[in-house]
Amino acid sequence: MENKDFAMAYKLACVGVTIQDWKSLGIEALLNKDFYYARKAFMHIRELKFIDLCETAEEMHKIRNLNETWLQSEILAYQGKFKEACSNYVKAKMLDKAINIYTSLKKFGDANELIRKHGKNRQGDGPYLDPIILIKQAEYERDSGKWKEAADLYVQANKHKEAIEIYGKRQNLDMIMEICKNLEKTKHTPEIELCAKYFKNAGHHTFAK
Image (cartoon, rainbow, N blue to C red; front, side, top):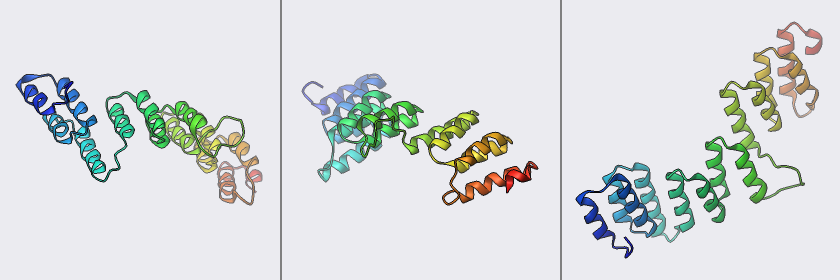
């Protein structure tokens, strides 16, 4: 494929090559915007996600909106080379794409590190924790049975209701009180009422007032 003759490469591949050879042919053709042979190669081995990528890239190419760095990043991600893909996305100024990869892999620390280094609208010198990432991490911890860690993350993300519900279901009144003490009456009336409900259900009517 050194001379980029993908038609000949395809004919030779039909004689009998490995699945990896077909994939390599498809990727090389795709990177060189030979969408016809890229698609044929991927169809031969039924690589549906790569076929979809061919369709998307070709449409973008037709309207002169194909970012080559984005295409390289997508291919790297599809190959499971996530770190390299994220680096490429950052170069292409597609920070959200890189963050989405790390959060989908549950690498929340790496996602926040990207935001710390490359994110916009930063204030102060402290570590930046993106609320959306915190919520995703909290959901992951909750679903993994780590309810204490999940509740702490919800509080950090200012999702007090979710944290109160976690502690309420486990009748952990001390932690509910801890959260309630830090809530403002004017801003968090529903959350304070939720705290009162759990205290009342537990028979602590004094705290429920």
